[in-house]
Amino acid sequence: MITTTEILQTIPKLSQEDCFQIAEILLQRLLTQTKPTRAQINQQLKIAALLAVDDYTNDPELTALTALDGEDFYEYE
Image (cartoon, rainbow, N blue to C red):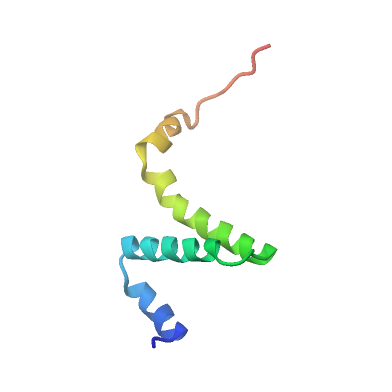
């Protein structure tokens, strides 16, 4: 059986796609186990946020409004 240390040493050698796939599988496994503690929930949220970064920086549907970056917005009454 592979040890945790061996897994952690292998991760940097994997492609980004493989890392996301593994993270998604691990997150799903964690979510289906017993009721998580607050610390586990916080860790899961961190993982989910990291997984979402790629989508929110590269998906055209999610980055469309960045064209407005730097635009002045005004409040209307």
